[in-house]
Length: 362
Image (cartoon, helix red, strand yellow):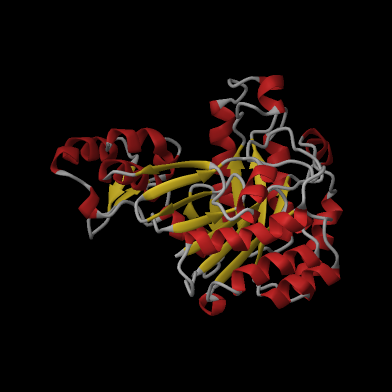
């Protein structure tokens, strides 16, 4: 089992982000930190031993050591954290000090993912980011000196006005800092974001998307990174265990306002309302939200889409007799290959249309 904790607080709201988040405002952050542990008690049997923990957001690094201690203590008092192999923590550059990072390490955090997005000052300003390229290097220095074993850098491409040369410089700057993992996300224009209002849903350019995807694949695999999922590259042995579990369809418990979880065939989603979340849990109730039973067909469809994104591919047992002609077409179009054990593996060209291929296998 795996644990995801959503931290909704941000210093400022980035114009492209569609995740549930807000500035602290009048939120009771201490109450939030206490509530996460209370939700764990209601969602999980005492002594449950998660294999991975992932703090996402929002900006988890905004939590003060005091609030983080309250949250972590609530988890430790109910769960068995002795089996945790990977504890990931999302952070923005220049939002933490050496003392703060050392505190994270003492808690057991062993993987930090930095929301860098770009090394181009102009594009950082466009994205609403407050850090500079120099801040990224300093942040990685602090993480390394504190003994954080794994550092990930998040990057975005196909940004408004971004050139292929700018993207190449960003990738090279990332490589120069020698991270253990690099995530490269194609910007999508989500509803309810400022970017959607400014640029519209059709702002992307397919030709640019393909060129930037291929450039990242060439440079990062050429530098020794394993392209183990469409958007993720890792040095051997540094793959994200939490994300791998999600891509393999394993159960995970989501805690926090706006968090999603899937356990025992039930998918639930907490409402994105921090005050309502805190009030419910401090009052002895589960937070408001929705839940649905996932039937086998839905689970298969989801797993198809996830596994096709990985370099492990789709196992042979998930392919049906009626898929034979479609698979043969994928092979003839050089969009996929079949491994010796029958796994369906997408080629680089196939990865560019992975969602469409998944639909063809439903």
